[in-house]
Length: 174
Image 1 (cartoon, rainbow, N blue to C red):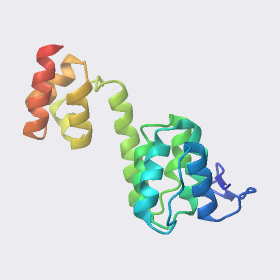
Image 2 (cartoon, one colour; image 1 turned 30 degrees about the vertical axis):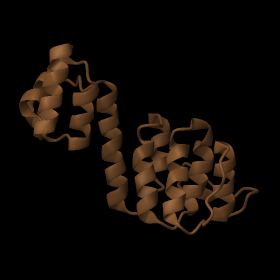
Image 3 (cartoon, helix red, strand yellow; image 1 turned 60 degrees about the vertical axis):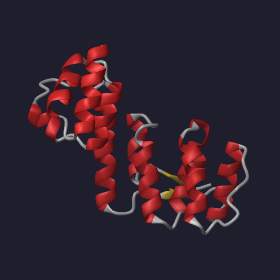
């Protein structure tokens, strides 16, 4: 297995440096069959998606992503992982992204996950603050927040009609 240490350096382990070995280990962790074609990112993606939701498989997922040749696939998984890992582990995952824009995107998602976890109840919430939040964050908050002030701002100033409508509906039930 390959792990990434705090300095971003890889460390090899007994399973070697072959993606197929890591995909098999990941499939075994999930108790499913490995992809029939390891080279097909469309077959690796469902395996990765299942592993994202299973904390016990995160080490195997990390090792597989380290060797995965598809930068877009790696960036997508890293971004989703921001919802699953705690703050101390985020840097390790973000470090897997292969270019600066993907790392910045994952960092932004991590900040948004922090806002989501407090249901958007951030100090000094203003229309301007709300305008810096992505549609992803706004709709997630509109659907889940119980913070009246956040829902009120989203209902009045949300970026899309869907966000405003969803927040207004939730506001009436909170």
